[in-house]
Image (cartoon, rainbow, N blue to C red; front, side):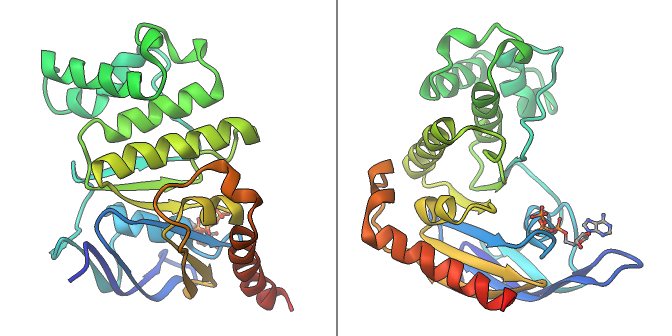
Length: 248
Ligand SMILES: Nc1ncnc2c1ncn2[C@@H]1O[C@H](COP(=O)(O)OP(=O)(O)OP(=O)(O)O)[C@@H](O)[C@H]1O
């Protein structure tokens, strides 16, 4: 049994063609798995299925052996837009997963402050989202997703709107935070280099199916300098090659 078992899962939006077609995918605990593929191939839908936001019509999804039926505290989700509450301060945005259930206590506030500190936002807790840059807002969204210490973090192109340097910093923050906690990560991106940089595995989706599942043996400690190495570029070429096969 893997940490996350996606087993023969299919999904169709009512009245439309099937979007996810018999996908099986296993994710080990503490691993980072990236999912790439052309626009519309079903990546977001698969992520929503893994989150329990959608239910498969066939197959099943098990998290630590238990069927995922609805989103819960074991799951964190980060979307392309930070989706912060504009009228709440940064600290209250981070505390949101707690305050949706109960009043935040001193320990919760301490934890939120710690997460903000780890993401370089210690001085920003009392600000409002509009006072932050795009990269800082993405960091707040990441802190919020980690607030309940989820076992599985699902990210859907969370850094797509950021410039290359900020994006690199966020990638390193994500890896550092998740490796330290052994958080398991599923990360959807259009960017092949981002997938290879972050992933222990990179899966490629095409027309609802996983058509390539590549193990990336670049070690657990990734630094941006890796990107200039031959090995890194070989992995990128392998993923791109499989994508080009589709276009040919
Ligand atoms: N709520 C919905 N109702 C009907 N069809 C949908 C719905 N959401 C998505 N689809 C369709 O399902 C297919 C897969 O969409 P999905 O968002 O999963 O793709 P994706 O690979 O994440 O795309 P992108 O990279 O552009 O975000 C697309 O053809 C899309 O039009």
